[in-house]
Image (cartoon, rainbow, N blue to C red):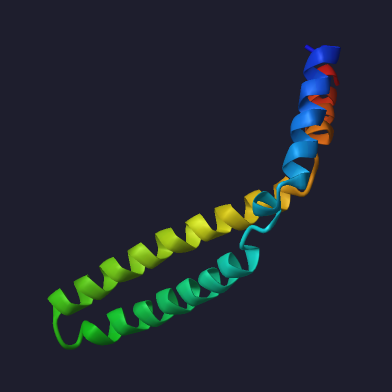
Length: 105
């Protein structure tokens, strides 16, 4: 179902307002990439520490493993943020046109 002229006009207006909003365009992709790197590094170190801690205590190894799981969740969230940033580079009207073409084709 294609968008009506009124809906397309509203969509273009929203796009223009978002492009002019400085707080919207200044998202922290660099911060997300830095946080992603630190989280991945921490998870790798945590896995190594878990293996080494198994020689000391199962409880210590388990606690370190819980930290690794938490860091893995942070990694997944940061990947999602970076992916959304990449998708936000495309305009909404281009996205809507491609979705419409997929439904018709």
